[in-house]
Amino acid sequence: MTGDIVFIDDLRIQTVIGVFDWEREITQTVSLDLEMAFDIGAAADTDRIEDTLDYKAVSKRLIQFVEASEFQLVEALAEHCARIILEEFPVTWLRLKLSKPGAVRGSSAVGVIIERGPRPG
Image (cartoon, rainbow, N blue to C red; front, side):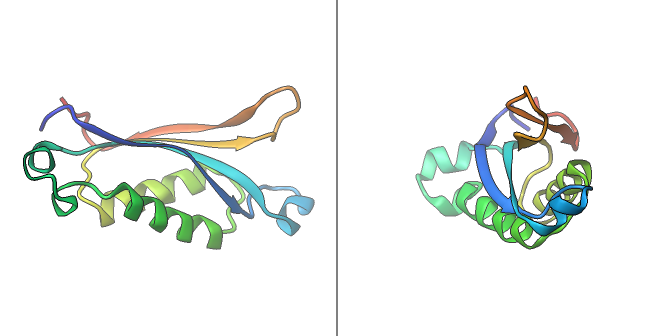
C-alpha cells in the first residue's frame, strides 16, 4: 500500500445532534474532515474516474446518512460515518474529524478525531 491519501475538508451537513432537549428540536451543522488511504496510481496512469476513489460519491453518501440521522453524541455519529466509508468504499484506513461548530462558547468548534484501519505507508 502506498501512502496516498484522498481527502475531503469541511464537508458541512445539517443534522439533529445533541443531548439537550432543545437540540433534539432543531438541526445543527456538523463538519467532516476526511483522510482516506487509497492508491491513486491507476487513476494517475489512466486519468479515469473509475480508477480512483470518487470523493463526490463518498460525500453524497455521508450527506445522505448524516442528514437522516439523529445521534446524541458526535462520537457515535463519527463511528457510524467511519463504518460506512470502510464498508462501502475501497478504503482500508481513514482519519475522520467530526466538528460541531459553535457548540461551546469561546470555541470555534468541538468534536472528535478517529482513525480506523491499519495506517498507510
